[in-house]
Length: 411
Image (cartoon, rainbow, N blue to C red; front, side, top):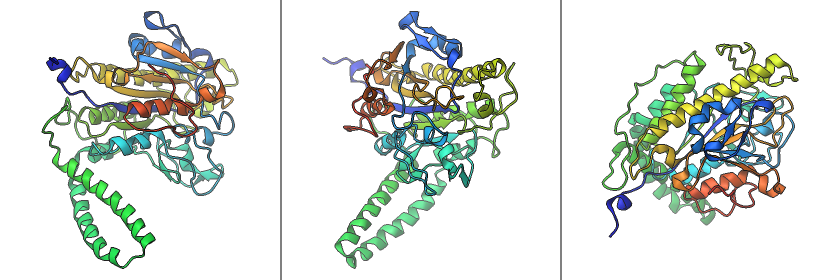
């Protein structure tokens, strides 16, 4: 007879991506060995007590773009798309949004797309500046501008008044569409049907968000928000801003408001300064990343990298404390991708992406090891192979994603 523990419903899987810009000090980013004997370089030391929960990935890259100017190495980080130098954004659907289209049917909010450093507007370097400010794309021509205001994120998760207003609009649209359809030709009827399908999906999400009833199955570990609504203005302290965004992701996952989240700590060609860290030059991150092997810049670069790793360690530590039943914690039920869009920022080297996968994917990822693809073929070094493997674990039925050739083995 099946035990109660075996019969108990399991927590859902979540996917997240935390990205910092402008690469790493290449002399201080490394991992070797596995299990308790895994050795972490100085920049990765904040993960020492959590190393059994991480998989360090080596020599993966966004295959089509492994060097060159900044923008092709950033916005396609989660899509593998070959970007074009056009005035109208043109890229490719990112893996977070592909997953969100699947998991978003079960949650009030399909995904969170967040950032700490605000995006720029207009053009930069002859291309839309959004290329430097987002990695999330809902379609080939639809980049998603990240939200930087913590209050706006909180309200999206918990303020349903706007959704109720939207529902009345949707009711009118659905009613009028029935009369409109009668006078349309076949092809136009098909286009209308496609539009109305998206409207009905939105209607379903509104109903779910405003009702929030769970009659059976797994229940979230938190029923009401355990943090206050953030202030209206942007936090002026980078440390406070980053932690607040991480706490909002955690809150959304604990309450099952969404199962997908991305957070950009900095936009590409970052103007962010880290002079609040001991011994760090009070210069812009982008300038420090172009170190030219200058010892002072390299030391600052390393400390900034370590600071970003500390944010990952903070979130992992919080997730590890959250009991989700059946002997698991939230850290067991997540795949959290962390890293940067290039290796050595001084040379814009995008071949060996500094990348860590935290969490255990519902028990399908062991952790405490290094996966090194440097001796593999080019086809086996594509970052989209990783994304395909993650998508399959999230329940999607895909043969490929982007330029993937096969799922990256993670078990």
